[in-house]
Length: 293
Ligand SMILES: [Zn+2]
Image (cartoon, rainbow, N blue to C red; front, top):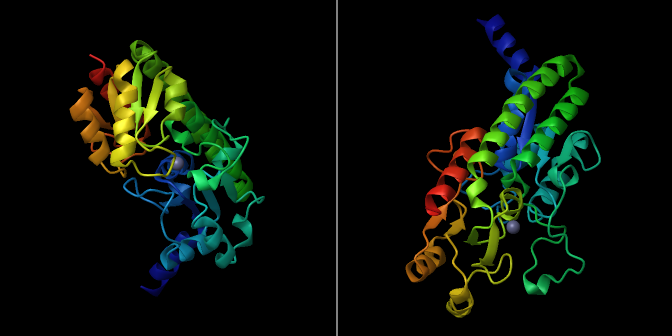
């Protein structure tokens, strides 16, 4: 009995702990780490990572983590620096192999030349919502494999094999999504926040407007009236938001311009049908094609 407990404890200790700031990176880490890693996400798909609190439970997870994977570029500025400061975990500080900032390993969009937070600029280092382009997910997967191998050399072969397998399946899936999404090129959409800039660039969509007058500033009756006026010359096919964004403005605009208000998944579990990483992009492409009929 005692022996059993000791064995369980030893196994749990040997497991590498990955803490992802956002659920999409947790899903990628699971693909690469498999059984060798214990993966948790600091946020759920229903939480806005711009605005969560540095709760004690997150501090405990940060203290135990061997690898942090976070979008970065200021997305977690309200809570991650507090966790890093208070956790006393040298291995996951910026600059260490145990701290992976996605913004450093993918090409960033919308990097401002001038920052003015008074204008509601909550993206001081560029648009941090990089997960909506599957090619970025491939880049992060490769980097996670490198980091895990550095932190856990005994598992390097496992991580390399799993990464190669994932990369093959992922690239074949990207080719299929691109083929299916070809009719979406040039299609106009409206988005709630600027969360879809990377998807827009990948598929050649056109985001003609955002419901937020500035990133992070909620739409008002006045800003929506102005937006409706601006959209008179346009024919957007869909109004797109994330699972955690309020539906009110989308539904209001949908009623006036006749385009459907869609929740597109951005991580496994953010919509019912997006059960894994592959399902996320299956769903994005399916819903946009349906709206474009
Ligand atoms: Zn944002």
